Length: 309
Image 1 (tube, rainbow, N blue to C red):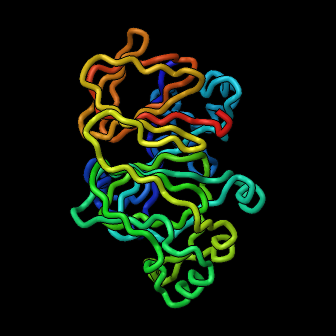
Image 2 (image 1 turned 45 degrees about the vertical axis):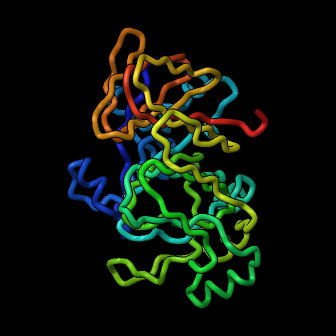
């Protein structure tokens, strides 16, 4: 089975920037561009299979070949680019139990790799208070940012956002998000902004306070121009690879995803075939493919992980 390439699934947003627009040669104001997704709310199409089936549909009946023995769609990672000109809403994500009971979805852990950012760019992740009453009062006064941890970021920085952690991606950032197969986001605060029709977006105050965990902390890694492990979360492992000589990447017990985070395409060699991977695009390597070979690249490598391992 060949590695899978995808057509991006994009959303226009009120906070979208212009970086995606530039390299995708699009006039759309794209804020979110899903690159690998098999979620019912937005499945990417497989670009290199006849008919370009939805990834969600293609998975059915092929779970073991694609994901590996004893791995399910719950273990499938979901990745996207986020391109901002304004700060995103303050959000929090639930764990599996809460999401399955209240939102008919799975829980969400996510991470952001900063592909590009303005010099003064920042994001919020984590709280500086452990008192929920303080948060209630800050929400009423519109001062929530006073109780969130602020991180100044540059290209190559990385941060994990575990479920239960308050967070908001800042303005003028192109980030690559890697996380669990969920679309459940509770909007805690939206800076009192309005959409093109003068309407405020809905908030999810009750759900946010149900799932927020002020003891949870993000995991932050400063940029390093060398191959290194970025993180080992409960549900995934992510590495940054600088490949300058021939390298083999093995599947092991499950699939993996590689993402070319440079503008120039790279070549991926699989079973005597050369598959080009365009700049800012992802490739899903099925378990049954076993391995790929790359001579030169700068990649993010994402793999699922089970808590019990």
